[in-house]
Every structure is written in structure tokens, then in C-alpha cells.
Amino acid sequence: QSALTQPPSVSGSPGQSVTISCTGTSSDVGSYNRVSWYQQPPGTAPKLMIYEVSNRPSGVPDRFSGSKSGNTASLTISGLQAEDEADYYCSSYTISSTWVFGGGTKLTVL
Amino acid sequence: QVQLVQSGAEVKKPGASVKVSCKASGYTFTGYYMHWVRQAPGQGLEWMGRINPNSGDTNYAQKFQGRVTLTRDTSISTAYMDLSRLRSDDTAVYFCARDGHGYNCDYWGQGTLVSVSS
Image (cartoon, rainbow over all chains, first blue to last red; front, side):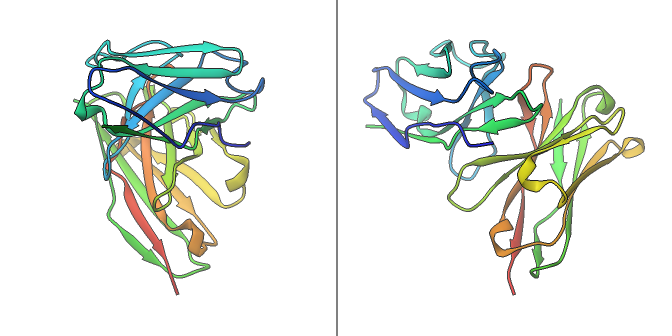
């Protein structure tokens, strides 16, 4: 099972919006609405930000939103804040009853 | 509150095995699957496997089939990850993470560093 494809890095200024893509295949992202997104600041454990493509857990700001089209899922962060700077990972359930993560995207707030 | 507390750092030699524990509290241990995910230094997250603490049923990533064993002890609400035939590229932080019923990991342990070196 190959890792999902994410851009290595994205950046934006405070207040702007950024979108991180996550491309898989018809065996994972394209087969289920079971895509999650995680935020990981350096040296910490990941934190769930989005589940089932577009749902936010309690406590996650509504500046974070998710979507999916075909084999590609996306995470959009609007109104960027300095505290959003972190690594972001997507994950998807697969037809083999396993999970696969993306390679990760480093978000820099300029 | 939900907490996952993992065992401490380990240093192992190539060819050895390591067993990492993950003690759960604040919820019904048998009611949620538990995932294991690792992260090599400077690298991304890698899914290793999942266990149903109620039944003991497991799913493993193909990459780790035959080398990883996930178990649990329901009497002490603890999950275990056993990795054998260690190599230097197994050096990583190993996380346990609860499956939040939505095919996601909603709570994570603090991570356990496993270093493999001769």
C-alpha cells in the first residue's frame, strides 16, 4: 500500500487561506468517505482535526474544513494564524481493511 | 478524560524484539479499537496495525506482517505492540491511538522512542 500523496510544503500569511491536497487511489480515498486529517506540531503527538472527510471534532476551530473529489481529499485552513504552523497528515481507510497515511505537508505561516 | 500512557524509551540491538505498552484510562477499553502508528526521525506517519480489544482480532499493514504482533490485556486496559527482528530502520517513535468509531484516531499516546543500534 503506497502512501497518499501530499505536497511537501505550503505557506501563507496570517489571515490568508491555504489548501493541502491528499491524492490516493480508487482503493482508498476514492472508495470511502473515511479520510482524516491530523495536525502535528514539532515534538508532539498528532491531533485529529477532520474525520470522515469533512467533520470536525469538538474543539477544532471552524477555520479548518475538509472536502473530497474522486481520489483527492483536501484540507483548507482559512484565516491562517501563527499557531496553525505544523505538519499536516491525511489518512484513509482502504479496501484491504488497513489504513494509509500521506507523506505529510509542512505548513509555514509567513 | 481519555488518556493513553505508553511505556518508556527502549534501546535495542539489531535482531532483537521490543514490546511497547499503552495503558488506557477514562473510557471503556473494550469499546474502541486501538491503532499503532510509527514515525521515523524526520519522517511521516506510518500505520502498522489495529486491534479490537474486545475480541483480540487484528489487522496489520502488509509491510509488517510476520514481524508485528498486537495483543491486549483487558484486565488492566492495556494494549501491546511487539516488533521482532529489529533493524536500524525500525528506529522510530511508536504511537498507540484510539479509533474514534469514525475510522480515525481521536486520542493518541505520548509516543515511545525505540532506538535500534549495534
